[in-house]
Structure formats: structure tokens, C-alpha cells
Image (tube, rainbow, N blue to C red; front, side, top):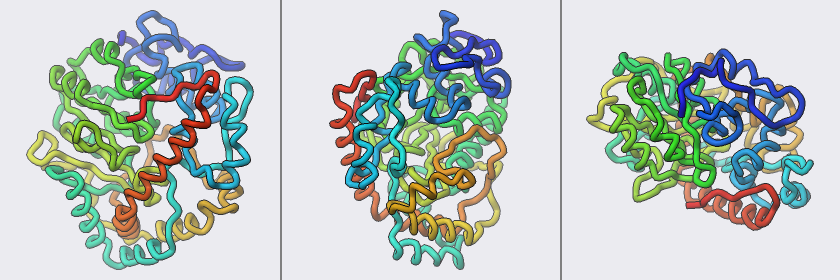
Length: 406
């Protein structure tokens, strides 16, 4: 990708009304790299424009842009069990591309969602009284999945990313940039900027959601401390290209498995490659404990043995227990739609915010996550079933391309 700062980037093309870039893209987000041909929305850089567009008219507008901009499939975005009555009523809307005037499917449960069982939520109450023990038990279970990794539990996935970026900044003071995919979650960008890094955005291959080879080879590495490889929508990428590029450039590889716990490619689980990995246990993630995350540091690696912002106390998690009780009462029931429509609950929102909380996972969330690990195969099977259903529904729809499913 060519050189440039986000303040100089042209306005994203396409869309209705005002085509000026949002203020976040013009000034607040310290980004390097823009399309070499100087145009937005075409060629390398088009996914960067989509990242910027997330701060505009809301998810509906962004969903309407996806098919014509990078051919993104609605399958991963809208994956939900088609057995639900709401899904059956909205099948016609699912077939109709949003760019032709159709509305995004509404009223569906989030991707990878899981309804908590009463027994799971109740047994997790033990974490209120022995939080440190429950956190340690979860760490040991995760270390079985990730042998050779030291597990550090965090308040959230973005808190884990922030602590990891801070650790990179401490160890590589001579480098102040990180490479991330130009289409990814806002939380990755917010965590990097809060840790003191500038962002170098690299375009993605729309068929695989992995780094575009040409864009990755054009990166100037002299200031790059780390490369973050993502497994978007749970689709594992092969990581070898990013690992080779990072090694050649003297940077570290961070394997972001926030959306892909349990997935693997080439015999390596997502989160298990490179110098460090990241997990998230938020609602809709592969391990949906409604909160929490983890750092996975390679034992004996360059990032092992340090954590500048590590917590000193693990709370019990009374608020988390109440949240889980409310979630279990409405999720997957007719009450979920009205509850999701309450704006003060912020259901489904992901916003750019550098002032997020950083701390430890609480005991209740750790206990709940450990119990949900026992249902990991059930959850993965449900997601695969939903993906196959939507792939069948959307086959042949104009303006929609299905990504390569691995």
C-alpha cells in the first residue's frame, strides 16, 4: 500500500447523500496507507474505506454497501438458526440483496449465539465466592487447547488486545506501527491506538478475508512492531504468508482468534500461531460467556514474562451474574426482539472508543466460560448448520458472493 495519512485520504465513494469521510477517518484515527491510484473504493484500500464507513449512517447503510464493494457474503453476518419463527418470516428478505432496496434481516439472534442453560448460569455462581480459583481453572482448560502458551485472562477481548499492544510497545520502543486488516472490528484499532501505535491498514482478499498478497508485500516494515492476522467470521486463515512477511520485516505475529476459538487450519488452532494470540468471550463469539477475553503468549517467546497492565485483583462478578440471568431469560425467545430494540441496551453495537475498561475477568464470567467450553462442539455444529442453510438460501442471489469456506 502506498504512504499517506488518514487525514489526506479521499472521501469514500458510493452511498447516498454526503460522501465526505467521517470525522473519525479524517482526524482521530492515526492510519498509514491509502490506495496507490488515489481513488477510494476501488483496488487496494477499498476495505479501508468500509472500515471508515462504519462510523457513518449505521449498520443498515454499511450492510447495503458490502455486496457491491467487496462481495461480502451475508451468510456469516446473518447466521442464525433458521428453525426460529422470526427467521422463517424473514427468508424472503434474506434472499433479496440489500443494494436492490431490501432491508437487512432483522430480529435474528447474533452469529454464534448460544442460549444459556439455567444449570450453567446457576453453577457459575460459585465464581462469586472463589473468583481466583475459577479464573485459574479456566486458564488451565485453555492451556490444554493451546499447549505451549501462557494464558492471561482479561476483562474483554479488546482489553486483551490493549495489554498485548502495550507489551509490544514496551519491548519495541523503536517501532510505532501495527499492521491490521483494513476491514476488521473497531476494537482492534481502538486498542492499538490507545497503546500508542499508528495503524498501517492492509487490504484483504474478499474471497478468503485473509491479507491480499500484493497489499501485504507492499508494506514498509521499518516502523512495524507487529502484524495482527484475523479470522473474520470464524473463517480460519492460513497465516503462513503473514508469518513470513512479519519475520522478514522484523515484526511479531499476533494471531487474533476473537471470532474463531476452536477453528484450525493446517493443524494449527486459531490463536496458536505467532508470538501471541488473543481470545474474546463476548456475546456472539465462539465462547459466548457475555464477557472476558484472554492473552495467549508463546512460552519462552519475546513477549513472555511481562504484562505492564496486568490486574492485581479478580472481582466476583455480581453484575455479570445479573446480566447472564437477563440474557438467559430473553435470548432465543419472543422477548429477544423487543429487548434488542431498546437503544439503552446497545445490543449489537460496536463503536470506536479508546476509553474502554481494562482489567481482570471476574469470577462469575470465568466460571461460566469454563462450563461453556464443554459445549464447544455443539456450538460449532450449530454455526456450521446455519452457514450451510444461508449458503443455500443466498445461492445465485444478485450482488452477493459467498466467501471460500474452509
